[in-house]
Amino acid sequence: EQIEKGGYDHFMLKEIYEQPQVIRDTFRGRLLSDQGLIKMAGIEDNLNKFINAKRIIIAACGTSWHAGLVAEYMIEEFARIPVEVEYASEFRYRNPIINADDVVIAISQSGETADTLAAIKLAKEKGAFVFGVCNVVGSSISRETHAGAYTHAGPEIGVASTKAFTTQITVLALIALRLAKAKGTMSQSDYLRNLIELELIPEKVQEALLENDKILEIAKIYKDAPNCLFLGRGFNFPVALEGALKLKEISYIHAEGYPAAEMKHGPIALIDENMPVIVIAPQQNHYDKVVSNIQEIKARSGKIIALVSKGDEQVKNLADHIIEMPNSTEALTSIIATIPLQLLSYHVAVLRGTNVDQPRNLAKSVTVE
Ligand code: G6P
Image (cartoon, rainbow, N blue to C red; front, side, top):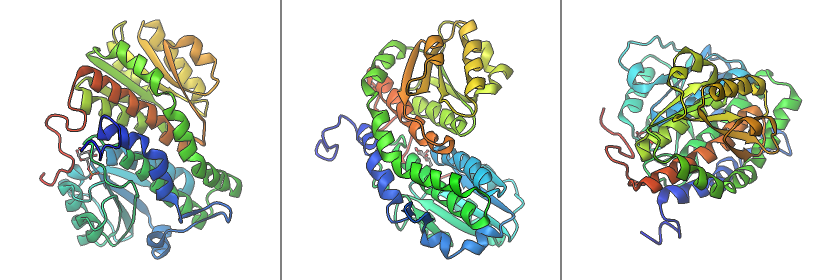
């Protein structure tokens, strides 16, 4: 097992560090940025189904559901197709409205999650076209769907999903951009910029990993916190949810992810000097709004750990700690911002002495409902 961990203390850490490579593996051969093209057989063969779709329904569980939320923002913004993201377990039991001109995208690392599989069967019965985004080749979901695109994350052993999530976002970004091109809903310059930026994501993820030592120091300060809040806006709202899920899963600290502006409708009541608040605050569209959210936390003596764009000065002056990351397009920054949050939960869990790779009560693949 030590050999399999490749010199890392845990599979989770190894898998976090594999991300530059597996993200590249996931877009290799599909992203032809010099030609301005995206080629994915599963999409090309079914392009009309996607283009004519009145609606895309995304069904998934857990971390894959969070990737679905990122995809919702991407597909709606780039390709202007309405998207709904459903917990597979809710979807399958609520007699959902599914039409023959709906496209369902099922996202699953393992390809074996019982609820997601049942949601697919239901969608097929109602005549929808079902597309799978799976990591495990030949898995039940990859066989049950009409078509699909694999993530190339390789085997993920740590129960807490890391590289599967960022490669899911990679595939979903490719799909959203391909559909945008087909529908003519995105300016050519924005489209090309996203292609070029996607190609740069592996090096930017590598750069984000360089903050590891600093993140370890932050983890040492907050490892005994009973609660923790994660905030983000736009594409980084699902990243906040995923950050909170990671911390819960492996450190057993109660954590909640929230859209930053919703803080005032509840979670703000929890903020005092004992509450660490992790805020994803890159210098992008929502920057000023997030800065004012940070000021609100500071006014209530919350401890602020901010993820900022390299060179940021404004948030640096407000936050207790900053973690820097390289910028990308707004959509693709969601991949980069995920990295420090994975490292933070990893270090907190190790410092608390939990079983990082096999947290209590959790299973890697949930094949029963
Ligand atoms: C389990 C795993 C999670 C995963 C979820 C969905 O709860 O512990 O890491 O996100 O199932 O799994 P899937 O394989 O469908 O992505």
